[in-house]
Each structure stands twice: as structure tokens, then as C-alpha cells.
Image (cartoon, rainbow, N blue to C red):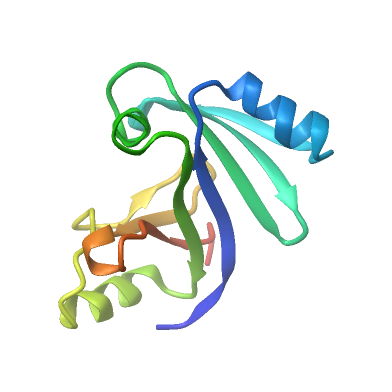
Length: 136
């Protein structure tokens, strides 16, 4: 499997506006875009830090992965996303070694990239997102 880079770090927050007061107002990071991802029941703000993004994620309601994470663990790092050259080949290679993936097939993100997650049970407690850039 060829890992190209760390793409982003996802951070679960209870209140996106309060989180932005810290990350944007105090630290000076610029919000590049905000999105609502109905499929995952969340809204997110994307901030660029050098070549890496921070994804601040607030749940839209009590359901969904971010809401469940906050209920179990509280605010903090939710996942680390790495860019891979070929997501399908990477998923197949990982499955052959017994690594558990969250989805059977990669999903398409709102930016057209493909993604899947390595289950934390297989990655020492870390939710790792595999992503392949759109058109890659």
C-alpha cells in the first residue's frame, strides 16, 4: 500500500462556533470551507495548516458517528485521514492481512474523493480514514 500523505485530522466538537473561536480567532487559522454532511449527521469546518487540513465536526443531532463519539469520549481527535494512491487496492491488501474496514466498498465524498475507514480495533484504537483524491 502506498501512503502519499496525511490529508487531515478530524476533531469532534460539541459546538462548532465555540471551536472556531479557538482555532480561527485565537490560533489564526483560516476557515477555508464549511459543509453539511447529512449522510454522517454533521456539519464541518475545514481549516488549512500548512499541507494538512483540520476538520472540525459538530453533530447535527443525537444520532450519527460524531454524536456517538462525543457521547462516549467527549471532544477530541476523532480520526486521522491519509491519502493513498489506490484505495481499492489498499483496502484489498489490508483485508488480506485481517484488517477490519468500516465499509465493504469505498464511499464517495462530497468533493468526489473516495474514502473508507480502518476500524479502530485494527489500528491500535485510532480510526484511520483512507482517501483517494478525486480523479486519482
